[in-house]
Amino acid sequence: MRQRRHQRQRFALHNFRMEWAKANILIALVAASVCLLPTAGVHPAAQTSAQQPAAQTSKPAGASSHITVNSSQQWVDTNIDLIPGEKVKLTASGEITYPPEGKTLERKSGPEGLPRSFSDVIRQYPVGDAGHGALVGRLGAADSGQPFLIGAGKEFVAPVAARLFLGINQSTKDAANAKGSFQVTIAVLEAGAAGAKAGAAAAGGVLAETNVPSLTSELLEKIPRRVTDQQGNPGDMVNVLIVGTEDQMVQAFTAAGWVKVDASVESTVLSGVLATLGKKDYLTMPMSKLYLFQRPQDYGFAHAEAVMVAMSRHHLRAWKSPSPYQVDGRPLWCIAATHDIGFDRDQRNNKITHRIDPAIDNEREYVNTTLSGTGLITQRTHVTPANPLKEAKTATGGSFNSDGRILVLVLKNGTN
Image (tube, rainbow, N blue to C red; front, side, top):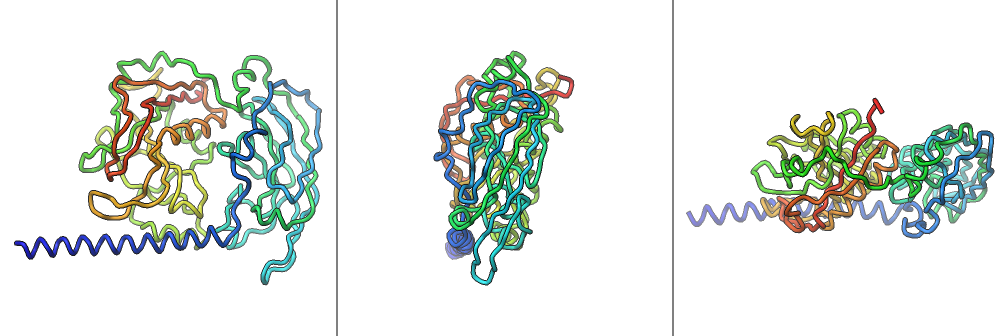
């Protein structure tokens, strides 16, 4: 009996060492990619002071501005504050030149950018699937605004009130060595909404908090406070509630730059990074199944740079609550959102698992800012249930802390 127990212990230790070795290989691959290749842009904190939009006023149709985007800058503050519903047209011309690099000859790029190559996959550009050197834009803060491709021209309608930034799809190393500039004309095609709507969203698209009367304290108490693993061990906290149909929920996350995650967990962490290096965007690296209402998550979403997703990504799981829990006739979605920040040992089985940021309120607010920037949120608030959860451990043994509040977001209804 003792001999068999020792054999099981040796076998478990062997498995842990093998998993840990895989993780170390992964970390080395990712670290090499990040350290040897140029990374994107200015740290969000460095741009904060220029990102608070002023009081919004609708600009007349036909008004235009001219902005120069120098190749030495990754983001340029246009000093233009758009308001909801304002339709603008951007047209760009000019050329930037990148010097020779290794065996690569001098490269010239117009606003549409250079053709994508393998090396672009493992570099972190503002817009991951756009050409190197392309003209790009962003509405709002660097840590929440979703960059988008402009190229030689683009028309769009501002979904929220936010400052417009223009940039180049390049790394800071590129910016230090490039020459040239783009000239951009920004013309107002249609004036935006004036008055109350603009004022309500003047803080960069984040609505003022208002009560959601249909979300009663009785209903709130019926919502499980935590998800569980398959064995019933309590895990992540339910820290976001979303009111909306399935299509509305998926649309909101997609518009905010979140990517639907594969449901299968057959692929390992190591194969995930190899797939990324093999020119596949592997944001969809599978999540483990967790349970709420006695079933696994209905959806998983992730938000991260593809080259870093193996070690660090914003991610969440979503469950549609039972039909009696509807709010104003629409489903209530329960969200458990956490931020992967590295690797750890799973205390249940000694295998390797992701380690989450213990300050999970930060991830709750990341969901808040990214979704609020889509213009698809009509109401938002924070609620504190009775006996709020403020400190606990996940099913894998990691600890987390919270102020106990739950974010509530009401999605725009098609009938509104």
